[in-house]
Image 1 (cartoon, helix red, strand yellow):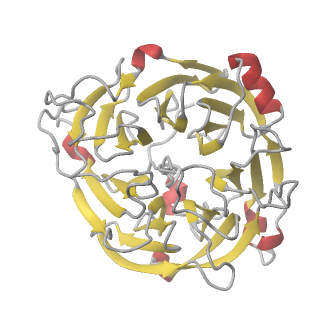
Image 2: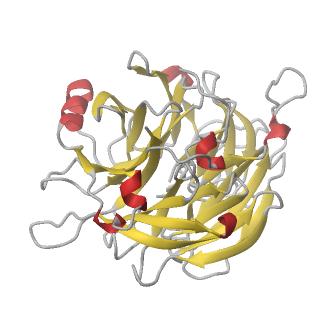
Length: 448
């Protein structure tokens, strides 16, 4: 299976995380450019445990038409209990149970979902049409995000507290997936191309990878770091090689919203750590600078912070802000960046890299929606957002605490320059003591 070339995003990041690979668009031309309305579904993952167990979680699959209808708040999803067949498969293949499903992405042909478990280090592959787990890999300490390459040949894993970037080879047609130890890059030990320590108290104090973002060539991987700084990797070499390095003064920490548009890779930074609760930055990298004119070969950058990224926006002076998920609207003309703490969307024009507006999500439907990850309907008329719960399970302390856990349906307005939260499909997981435990995080649109 080989996709057409197009826009790539994650997340999400994001990424991010910091709490999201990339949230972000899913890499499809339709997601970024719009087009005729097509059947689609929205997958949302509740991180909270199921049936009183210490593992599990739930995937909710919503019909897109139901979410965009007049009774969207009453949409009834399919449920995939990750404490059932998925847990059994992981136990059989890794002798351990997956804990806390965190990020979900689809391969380019949408045949498989790739779900990472942030507390246990598992990466689960799901047959998307049959809703069936087909493979489970234990990557180690923490699989914060697992990002498929657009050409469907591999997945890059951000092993957060292991401070490793790992690679899984993928053959979706045969359901063959293999962790490649020879490809692993240790971010805490060794030196960069310039000879500097990869992890350093001044340059990059905490090299836990947050959200890898792979470009449309399936070669460049932008890896955000928890303590600030960034590495650009050649995702195909074994081990993966650093081709460009950035310090924390140049790229701030905890980025998890990444998207490619117009030959640029957008990367954000966010807050939600004990030492830096508020952060909102967006950077743009010219992808052409990482390639030579002849043969499409990658250029290695021995000088730190080269090529220099463009600082698109920095709102670090605001209180209670946390840049996270992102999406492209209006045929890629506008980049939406979610602020989890500020309950708003910041809108950037990709042609000029200027902020052209922002709009709130709090209001009549929710006093504290806490938007996390974003994705776009195939026709470009709606953006979906995962809305966090009151007891967020990833990150402590956390800027992302919401009052209405579920899937938010945002109608795109003014040609992509604005939007309005029109409905919330609520997700609930009340424990035996009557406490609402639901904490949606991962969210992705899948075209049928």
